[in-house]
Length: 148
Image 1 (tube, rainbow, N blue to C red):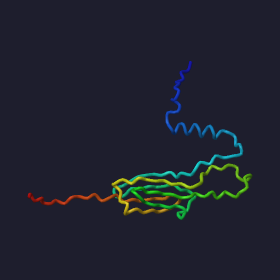
Image 2: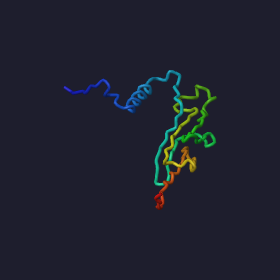
Image 3: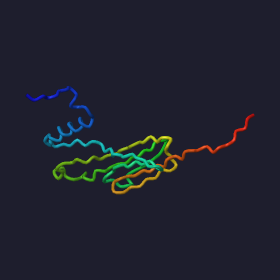
Image 4: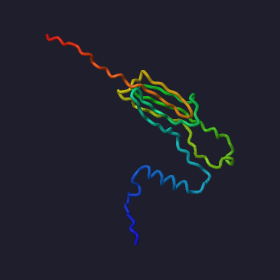
């Protein structure tokens, strides 16, 4: 006899596990003539070194002219429109469409450790790299305090 552990929610213990099961289930269904196209949401990596914070945003198939970066009220916003270049093709030419398209906005709350006066961005090979300088910590010079 083989022991099989059963738990009512044990098989769905993580969000990632649930997503994998849903995608596997729907991926195994036959193509019924329509595709569900989820909105485009670029993935981001955040990291830092001794001088800067970095945000790398993955925006494949986009041009830098299609991306806007703004800063207001301590929030860095990156928005854009990933265009579907396959539109206009005959539907019988498209066997399967898996890429996502559409407008997106990603917003990042900047901490007091960041210097919003020194934000730079570069774009290469479908990666938007935003560099934010760390704020210079003010160190008090020693001073004499007079007693009144």
